[in-house]
Amino acid sequence: MTLASEYFQSYSVIGLLALVGVLFVAVAFGAGRLLRPIVPTPEKLLTYECGVDPVGEGWAHTQVRYYVYAFLYVIFAVDSIFLFPWATVFAAPGYGATTLVEMFIFLGFLAVGLLYAWKKGVLAWA
Image 1: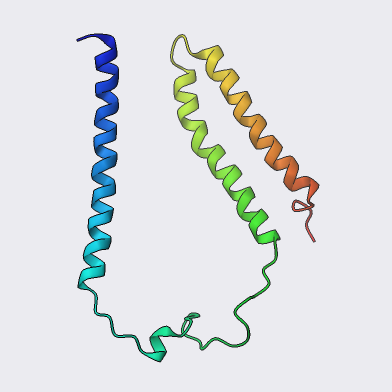
Image 2 (image 1 turned 180 degrees about the vertical axis):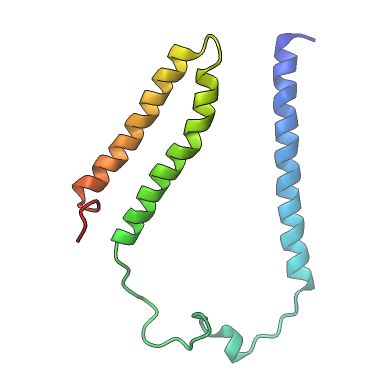
């Protein structure tokens, strides 16, 4: 086998796996739609809020700082998930300088996110 055919064969396996995954989800949703009973009642059409009848308008104000907290969590969660594989590749022979540069680029992206949160005042305890 040539190098190109081996390359595309590995991607064909990934493509086939993706197709099987999409088909599985489509069949599951289709079966759910065909098998579920459709009996609309006024209670079923009412907005559900944790078992409590909805009161007031449908729009509610949400403070933006919760989204910023979620953003900070994502920054540090991704950082911690990425550090272990990086450390294992860094230890492999021949990958030291490349993985070190990649890690500094990655940490630069995280620093930009952290700087954004600091500028917004999220890190200040109130």
